[in-house]
Length: 371
Ligand SMILES: *Cc1c(COP(=O)(O)O)cnc(C)c1O
Image 1 (tube, rainbow, N blue to C red):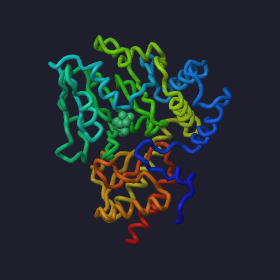
Image 2 (spheres, rainbow, N blue to C red; image 1 turned 90 degrees about the horizontal axis):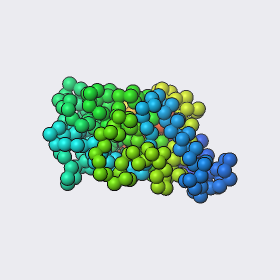
Image 3 (cartoon, rainbow, N blue to C red; image 1 turned 180 degrees about the vertical axis):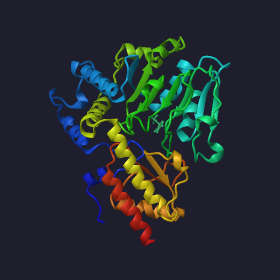
Image 4 (cartoon, rainbow, N blue to C red; image 1 turned 180 degrees about the horizontal axis):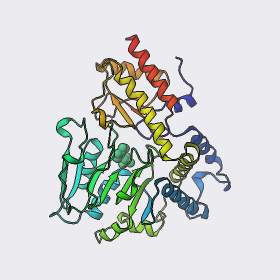
């Protein structure tokens, strides 16, 4: 294999995030830096108060509603601060009293961060309903593992643990307790029963666009639960009333999310098709791992494996280093594991093609044959 030109390198980007985006969208983005069709201005210089941008926000919201089959009792917001800001915003808004603490699942790196972000002075306590710490975050709980308080103000979990490569295959929690979910790394990668969630948040930089915008889907009946006295910027109602245009929103990031939702609808053919492609990509890579005579090792339980992030190890750190160096020289990128765990991780977000995954598995097979 020879090394790749810069364009090819985009096609072999397995980064954990910001991640790969569809090639045709990248080309539209490139053209928009000079001039957005129909506007004649660079995307970087269009006012957020222009009619074009107000329409763009409304159109992007409509597309997300349509992709998720959202009913009218949900609001769709485009916010800043990333998923990390939501860790605290959710707790500030809805964790009301300590007699019935909010319930959290601790299933990996990002749910750990969600718990840290929800725990601060003057905040009622939270309760960890299940922790995967003792099993080194190698598996997820089943509903039977959880003992949940039906009077809790809410139940929070992370649908896909990006670092460890664990993904829930079913919805967790009780239907009588507001269900809040961080879907940052699998939002719009497959269909979901959105109507079973009271609040979903997901930043754009894994599956939907560049960093800078976070999508929040919030059910209307949650608004009356919001604790009074929050600063306006941290109160979801402020952004609902302002149609996500309270202060200067990330115009560029929202534009790219709009292009991605168009691509999902028209090129991919909706979330069911996206899911089929994502499952095929994941199967291709897990098969390569499973049939490698333990050369490549995945430490997560088979039923909890993520379709989005495939984390694996090689027999020694030296081999992992050689693998990563050689992969990089052949044009693959973003394959290093998260800095907290090391190893190798291939992220298979929506923008990564099946062909790219096949190239990766060919490389894995060659690498193993040649050591
Ligand atoms: C990447 C990631 C985050 C971090 O999001 P920021 O936008 O950097 O705050 C949070 N949650 C999950 C599940 C992630 O994958």
